[in-house]
Length: 252
Ligand SMILES: Nc1ncnc2c1ncn2[C@@H]1O[C@H](COP(=O)(O)OP(=O)(O)OP(=O)(O)O)[C@@H](O)[C@H]1O
Ligand SMILES: [Mg+2]
Image (cartoon, rainbow, N blue to C red; front, side):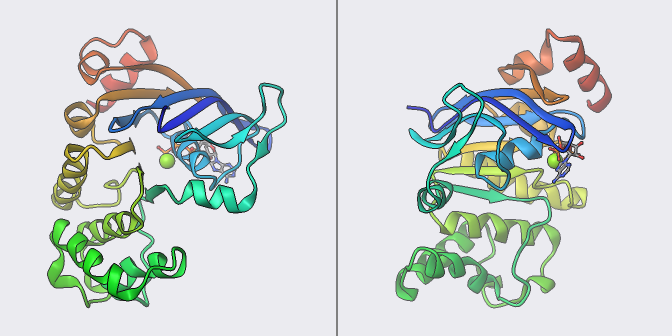
């Protein structure tokens, strides 16, 4: 069973076709890096996986459960709303812009969803949240408000917050691109650590060194399609498609 199975995903915004038949299967413990030019549909694809966007055609299964399917016929049916929420809860998402709650302390940011969404008890989630803060190196920031944190610290809190929901899969959408270069490293380190613990991850990133080093598989997207995918050494070392070559020549 795949952790994520997306088959022939199509999505358009008004007249603009943004995803043109994307298929991707992700196994447990895999780290997938998605690279590609701006506007190629990377964020939209991630957002479709956890139903922040709805798809027009295709099938999405998460850990064997059908989130949405068109039965190969063109009209998409989503699972019932409670089922959709249950399925999407298995995926934690980290955005470029952190999205922390400004009026909550760091600890409160971590425990809010486990308490309100999962009905966890304070006594159960607080020690877990403290463990997670230790893990991302921010134990001492437990009681401060996000406005007092650096961008890198905010992003590590956002990662810890996603992990507090105990997800099976983590989706990252350019988690370091809002950060100053000197703060990027600490966030990548946290992500590398998660990968080493065999978290299943999809990471949309501009950090080519990170993709090369940490990903098991690199997907190159352009213009709503997967142009090429393969081992990092292959994609970065000897890409077969001209579009991949042209992109890498620009960014490397
Ligand atoms: N909600 C929306 N409504 C209309 N158009 C949208 C919407 N979201 C994305 N788009 C368009 O879809 C296309 C793909 O956008 P997307 O954000 O998925 O690209 P991306 O590969 O993540 O780019 P970037 O590297 O700049 O983040 C773009 O042309 C974008 O303008
Ligand atoms: Mg994007």
